[in-house]
Image 1 (spheres, rainbow, N blue to C red):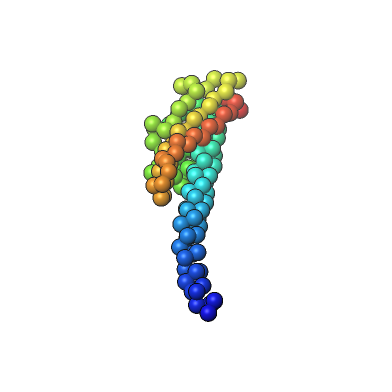
Image 2: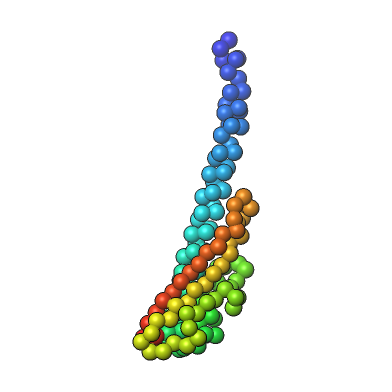
Length: 124
């Protein structure tokens, strides 16, 4: 008779734990995606600074950074980029900052502002 009184207990326990488990899964997905975008932005900033330090051409630096961050959707525009100075003189440092707003997949939190920064010595 005791078994009959426990009938359905597993379904109730699952109904209580399912939202927690789904929230955990969605949080892992969002964090992984944000981490991936942050790594892409850092690489793009470094690549943009490298090209700017070598060629002293902002257009080429933006193109190189955009090509390094191909996985970002929507892509980077000119408004995302900030250069520490308009030109790169030998011996000075050039810093390229890329600002990006990440929209979340779930819509539970966010959007998250992310930033990638690359710094190189000019004339390297």
